[in-house]
Image (cartoon, rainbow, N blue to C red; front, side, top):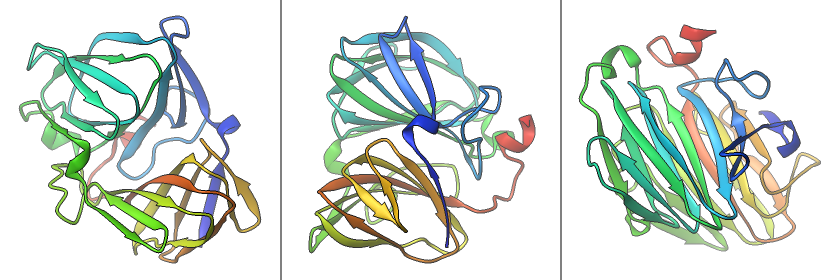
Length: 249
């Protein structure tokens, strides 16, 4: 098992509107400098929050997929296809398939937090497709709870989540204090963001906002000293097309 850890202080900070929106980025675009560079078909991951609320103005995207997960509070979204503000609350998810081009704007309301994660679905194919998007309410995603270890599944088990990028599995695990294990699928890279709680992996103490990756098709055993929550993405070790990272490095 190969585990690499990226503590909160080692991630890349950012801000919008003179600090009205703050963020840390465990995965950064290749031209952002520093931090963990893109890999597999993931090329950006940001955790953003705002105490007083603020809006990121309308801006364009093409070809790739943009996923927004509301962790706390609420956000609002405007795009050039729907031309209206659409609210999303805690637990809701939005996917934008930017295709041949779309512009959008995001509003993070006071006291709210979100993940935004970008996937490369094969830009050669998607750049000519019409832009589209879907909103998924929190209740769309099945949860299985066994002995204090609950798994919310976004991309499997009847979640009906329409993602073009291949080989992506997305889950959120909630756990009680105690001993637990996270399986890692064969030929996958596991990327994990600790939303809350304190855990120990192989003698290393990790807490909220720490990030780690793993591969090698083996369980990750950890000890939790308190209840917690981890957001997990499995992506392919290799993809059958030239990725964003390979194009622009």
